[in-house]
Length: 286
Ligand code: AHG
Image: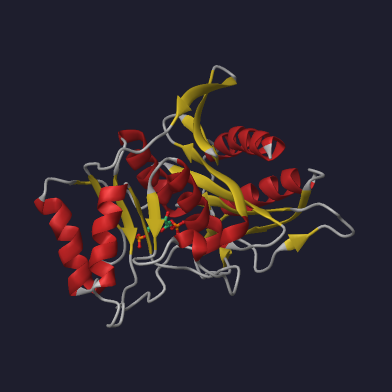
């Protein structure tokens, strides 16, 4: 486990260097989820894959940029790593913060098999957050990683980060989001889940939501590469992560690119989401 964490620390430094390269040419190809791929997505994907597959305890990898998982031949190793090499890469040209997200799974790519996770934030500073029992926060400075301590959510925060096209929100979801603003919550949404969720963790609480909508009935964010790893981070930090009614880390996976509606936050915000969505149980979610 610690070797995988150390490998992502090395990847962070190398990808951060790649990002400082001014070339952000688009490739004439799309990733398996239909998004336009940036050249840097491909470079980051290959860089991470090569480093992970060189680790003896890793049996295989899968990423948002690959159609299928890649397994080592004749390996008795147990660990599988699912990762999004460059989440929010469409924000690169706007020079906003972006990230890498990863989850470490034991033998199978299922929510219940997730044993550790983490993410890298490429912003004004280079940081990594590693979750395994507790949530460690590290910053790269003057050629070395420095431990900043552990992250812990309070029971309630002040940030509201609502994703998805508002035009396609259900009236109930809109009422839920509005109810937080009516109580003084502040809008903080960059369009990159890594900086948006990181900010809530750093400030100690709040709500990030990406609901089911008419144009995206299963949400947008992918279970294995984005949703489960962050659910693990939030639960380790004392928060909660649900799809509206169910715990995200109990959801099934039918295909590696499955997505799901998702809500991450501190306990009081998530309790209100659950109350709202439970009241919808006998109705359609969208
Ligand atoms: P992409 O990697 O294509 O830029 O997508 C980013 C993801 C995620 O990081 C973010 O929370 C979400 O898409 C934002 O989606 P909306 O723009 O639909 O809110």
